[in-house]
Length: 306
Image (cartoon, rainbow, N blue to C red; front, side, top):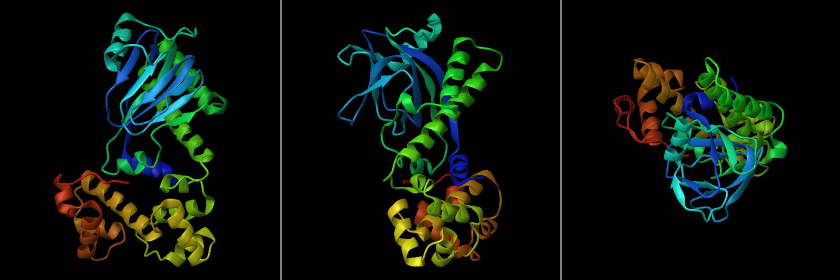
């Protein structure tokens, strides 16, 4: 499994809501703070997106895709000076009334979903991204365009199993939006952006593949095909932490998952993530997570920031 897939698997990205709705003239759809992230794509018309804390609104055109990872309040409107109504109430009413997605340009038809991240490390993903990821229509091609068109048809003409298909298509749309954003962001900092850097990706893949190995900086530099000094400098600059700090975090992510999902003894988990001594593992765990492994297993923990 590649590093991004492994991390997304551990943060347990789940589709929470999938569907389509129409932003009509004369009213703005106001969403309050929400959990997880949202990913929407405009299939017809255009509208404005306003995000609390971001000074300039963004215009969404047909074919554009947006990812909103911070959970900040938003407003979608064809005219931002229009009176506003509760987003969820309006969309729910459209569902009861049978409002259909339209190809006309008098409003703006959008499809997509909201995703929850059921993990204590979810901030490590969400805060690596900017508040708004805006992918313009010219870039939505290939699988991304296919997913968008297929999702539109599934929501327009539901078939047996259609909701599950729509959820999976929303997931595909989100992943391709993230891929595109990573490939287009030259100076991004964080583990997510390091995955598109061949040499950093090689080192990260090595750590992910063999977390229990007694890695040294020289070992990782060799994986990256770089000198020890250059590797250490590049890794810190690209990822934002040292390679050893990243390795420790990854080990703790794996440990947290096993503590939560299994009844394995702490000593077994410690050895599986590279610690021969349970005491050393406990100290590292408490330093990163903020509590002991036992307390974490019992639910006494905090969410891990990026």
